[in-house]
Image (cartoon, rainbow, N blue to C red):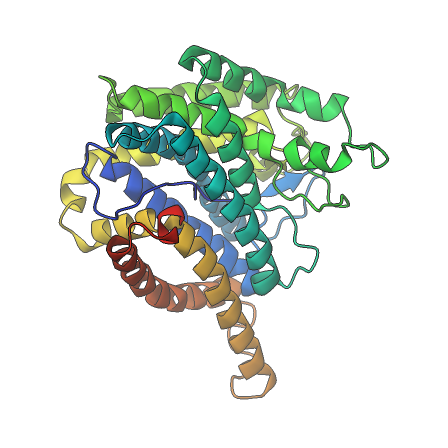
Length: 392
């Protein structure tokens, strides 16, 4: 799955609402929980398949797997969009503290480098991938570095570039295939061309989701003015996005990559290409992400003092820490389960044929470990605001 708006940049866990909107932290917390469940299914050997790659129609299993997979896919678009919002909030708060533009840019470059390194480490420890592919952390790091430079341009030009890249990304992928003999081959696949046989192995090309980061940045800048993310505005934007998605999906032309065929089961109408990412994929999941945000806006008063609201806020404010730790925790839980089953301590028939039940059990166990860890880490970062923890 993809990924996580882990470019949230903060040096204190309890920032005022003038620096960031807590509802966005809670939205990020929801995305974190969805992402964690999706990764749990991998370590529990019950993958959720509800997307295609390179326009190849996937073999899907059951309706519950598909529906749950579609729900968890909300996380990717939320993460990348909130990454841009966080950049806008961060630069605004640091200017008020007297930071120069170079200090702000340098911070983003350092954080991008840390994300690239963490991606290599996590892929090796959690997945055992010695080839250390460029995954979601690398993609967000590259997007962060690009935005660190682009943010100095006029806001209208950033918005225009984001729209053009969103529309033209599929064209670039189709017109400029990766050429292994090219001196720029590694840069080519890293930036915008998903290919399972590439080297380096790129699972999340950066430019595919860069439009979301730019959109989030533009919105973040607008939120520092008089613009308000009201529930009605969010629902109107979601309705517009879903309408555009439906038109493109029914037309079956540009913007799909995997084109739905009438003879296919109807569930495939909702199976869209994730890598390289298609326009319909982004429109569909970003629109539903806006719906979730609108709901959070409506129930914010109930979340402020409730346990659920506090947990979502903690997870949203420790997103990078959670991402790194959850892969390690769920990989360990899955390994322990397999070892216990192979040794005969657990019966081999336990959860046999009920993969999603096993996923649910391992998911809950992991959260019972991760939520206290995130709360402790948030407090630790608060006590050491000037250390390297400010980048994490």
